[in-house]
Image 1 (cartoon, rainbow, N blue to C red):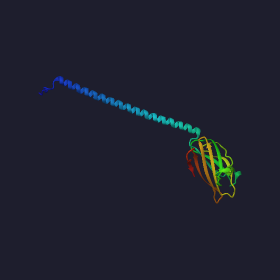
Image 2: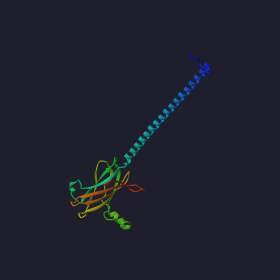
Image 3: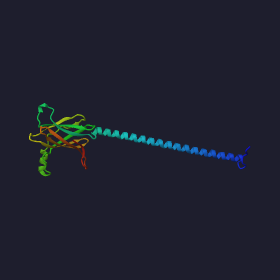
Image 4: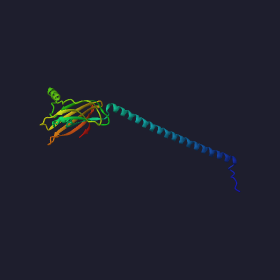
Length: 212
């Protein structure tokens, strides 16, 4: 029968066992504490992520509300076409219809319509006179709705004209827009249109919105 080594007495075994149990207790306590901290960190990260998501949703909703009031990034496009009214069956009369590009209506729209076919003097009384004479008949303003193209006025052209350069400035609640349009009459007497629409940004270069 094996005997216990003389240097391992029963009290020593008890002390050694107690030390081992104490070490194990400390180990498991430390492990539990780390797990709790990790769980707390994960919960905090999840909470912060959910908070950011909610903040983004609120900011997006605020932008949506503001856009529905101002018109957001919508902008007008003027189309020059033959009038729908059969009584105006004249190739030298064109209807000016406005459509809205974007998600929201344009509110409080007002127009300034000019004929720039002839270069305008740059300064002086002659420039003012040419600028005033270059104004075309006033277009009807108001609220412009998405998905509806409404005639806002008419322009008359001379039979001998084959080219026109027009500028339409729109003032709306969401900003100022400029459309530069070139009209060219083809061999069949129909007018072809090319246009650029820009948004005027104070203190900066105008932003191109559409060209066609």
